[in-house]
Length: 255
Image (cartoon, rainbow, N blue to C red):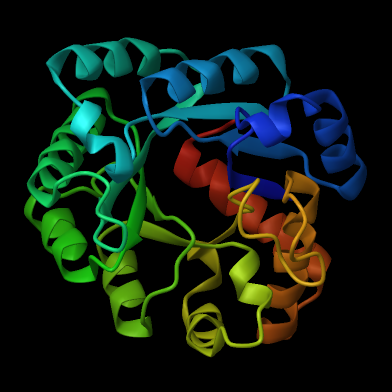
């Protein structure tokens, strides 16, 4: 299995990182992408990826932190992104639910990082919350899927997911797929082509059933794999293998 989106640099995880990674390996998780969300966390993600085999990094500024994005930060992200262990720019996007940065600043940061990804030829990881139309309009206008990309922790509609796939994106699901009220996501999992599906934990957040209330970690991605397998009437081992293959493809991991 491949946990395609984790925050191993989070304080809840990194204090016990060696054991977290051991539990992941014991559970069958062979690869993990550690996701940056601002400059500091991006630097930390790369340090972790360099130290641990099977761990990769992304670098980027989350919409919550878009107010911190400026030309200097862009230049530093670009320098980090040239490291072979950095597999994407992200997580980037728009968040109109919490609005922790002004929306215009979010849009500016999102566009600039799409252009950065295009410049260096790497995919992007998108965070979209309550901003579906603006995200899709931006994807289309700036050809954001030119080098591939991921709609992280997807919770949107089936038509939007199909539109994202059409524009070069993979659709990734986390712990909420296991929740009883996730009927919309269940439909998307069934209808989206298998070669465009990914799994993730977004740890330490979004712990799946039956572990809700605990700190999430990469080993728990198996619960999302099992739910996806049940929904698609496939064996969990097959889903684990195929989603790992998909993640390696979008992240361009060949080892």
